[in-house]
Image (cartoon, rainbow, N blue to C red; front, top):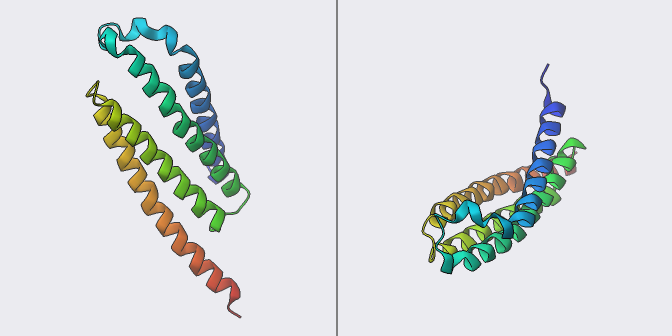
Length: 146
């Protein structure tokens, strides 16, 4: 039977798999030119590597914060200020990834689509952060009401 604990465990496993994939991509990016030979012109390959490595920073931070958020949720800490802060930071990581992608679209326009997706995800996380922040206020008010 599927339950909340299994769902959170699956989410944590997925975050760990994404962390491993991020490390793998960063480690193999210099040797993966053969994948991009027909897509990225030779004069832009250094820019491509710069995009990958610059984008790895907000991606890694996002995954670390997402894992911490899932851990707190699994411990029963749902509507707490730390989760609101974590969601805020996750949204900023999405916006940072979007900025890297938008800047990279100057040499390869396909990055623009990735930037739009990252910015949209940042917006969604920001809205969820606002909802959680209001829930934290309501919970705090209820906790202090006799």
